[in-house]
Length: 105
Image (cartoon, rainbow, N blue to C red; front, side):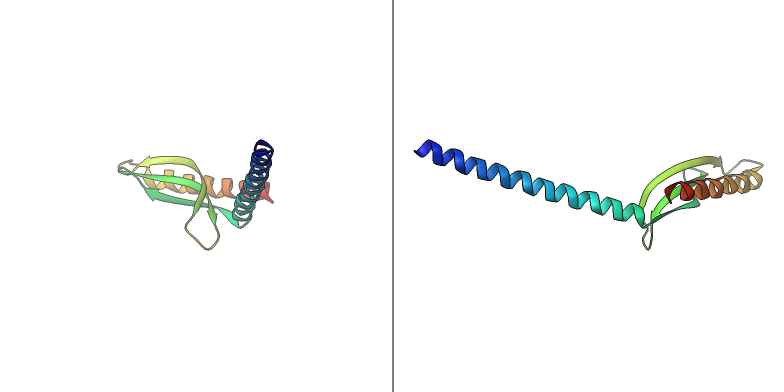
């Protein structure tokens, strides 16, 4: 009789654990989906180790949270043709951001 009660208690605990996991997993999935839905691809740049990195980032709206990033190019600050390469890289980054945005709609 004690064994039957122990098995019933273990079964109930297993069901509770599975239900809790399903709820937590579902909530996490919804959070990620909402974050991805409220995000936009943007072209930007930043300094790194005596160079400028031009990137396309997926940013959460209204925050500085970066959800994804693709490097377009890294240009050494000492490059004699820096301005031309930077402007071309930013144009490429804006084109990629527009492409990524059109694919996510």
